[in-house]
Length: 325
Image (cartoon, rainbow, N blue to C red; front, side, top):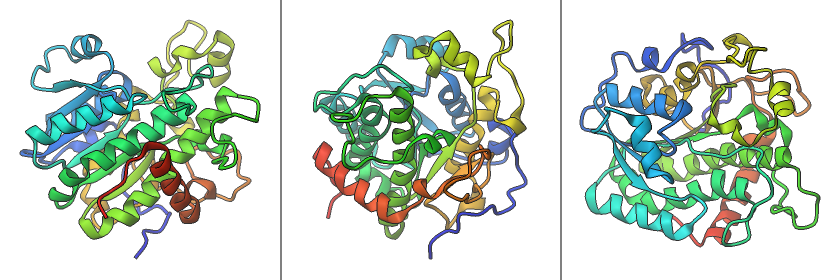
């Protein structure tokens, strides 16, 4: 049975923090991977999972920065990965599988936003490549460990920015249309949500469930490519440059921003569920395709199973990665 895209009454909300979500949950003996888990909401996700007893691995492009940011959390394992480099992804997965038999939680948290036009080694636009294709390949390579966990969860970081663009299957990599950084970002975030739809459908018989997440608007290093005018337009900083905190209006602290990822990764409220887009520690409301004001719900373009299946097949072609048949 497909999980309905409608709230379940979790009891949590926009102001909930990752620490509140993880309270009372025991992850002793569980293995978790959090990509980009050394800054922003990724770091807070790592802190929460670690506090519940999980062994956490942080794949990082910048090892030195990761270790510096993780500080005294020396039990967190840092290993190299570059989501724009297919060989790097395969090498990380091989090292993980040689050391660990199971993977209980995978949080695909790393990402880039509104970057100038750059292409990966295969010619794919970098936001789609890093945010979606790199994580798609990583899941395919780690699949045996996810299946062996007998109840694994995969969390894909999407965004309300899926409203900006669907998947252009005819010109995915901006080879014919004019490149727009925000259109490319929106396309990648729609891809993250559709990835969870398809993965959950495939993974359910194996005990692997998948969710996509809108974390909220948080002032982090994700905005490093934005101009001052673009940052001002997002309305996440006040005039003095300090973050604006207003959870009900989508402006959160990193601790609040990590809460939905942690909820999807660990909450017993989601046992037997999957393939849904979540926000504010809740299954998000399904919206009409023309809804433009609700930042917490999800449009049909990000939950369409037909588009999800099409994207999955295309991702296999673009990466050469497949789940074992």
